[in-house]
Image (tube, rainbow, N blue to C red; front, side):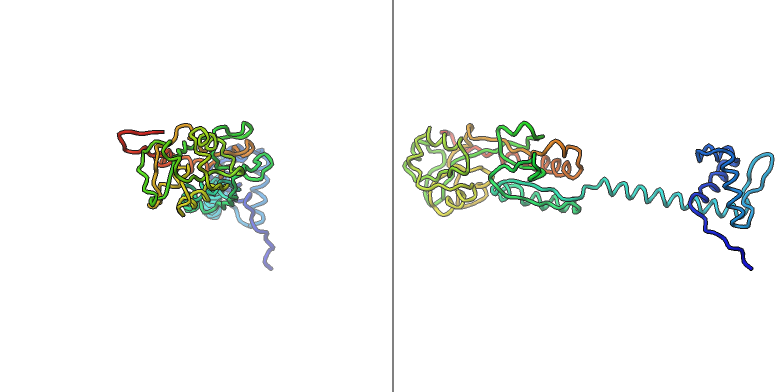
Length: 310
């Protein structure tokens, strides 16, 4: 009758390999971090269960038999396979993955971020971007969003922020108006103007228009930059817009240089608790590199004119 034999566990293969490598029980005990007696007992138990002698004992040490070599060789393969699997899993954990709740404005999404998000997804397919489009700053402290890509000259102090670039703004109008670029701002007051509605909260543009006597020329107000852009395209009037939003449209003409006092910063903002999250840093680093590479376009181009007025 065949003797019942239990399967060898990984610890059994590990013991045999340690003895084969060390050539002694004392060396194996040091490698395994157990006592000499424990190795002796384990090895005897393994040999008993297998019904074979795995090592020849002598005064010079332990020499593996043919069966012992086979078990030791199998243990080496198992050890390499286990290490390879461990490296693979550890590397996978380091690859950014998961969901990022992102908030930004409609104009930034349309004029800057949409193609960059597509490139980011191609580079990091394990990350899902969930984008909330709003002109209101979501409360990152309450985790209404993980990160915000927002225009600001004074980002909230309780958030971690990285400046991405400076956004330039200029006056734009439809080509059909026939206005020569570089004309003094004062002469533009005779044209109809489009203003920012109160919900847009663009006090800097409102103050600039007031200072230049343009508020009385305002015939239309709307509360998003994309809507202002659409109004210019329809021929409603002139308006101030970020250069990134208007410069790509052949029917819209830049009429002034970028207006210094209307420049603002573009920021990547996140809650301090997300400082060490790999996927968040992957997005931040990607956008930093990609957006800074477009700095000349986003800063706004100066008109190539001998005489400039702003």
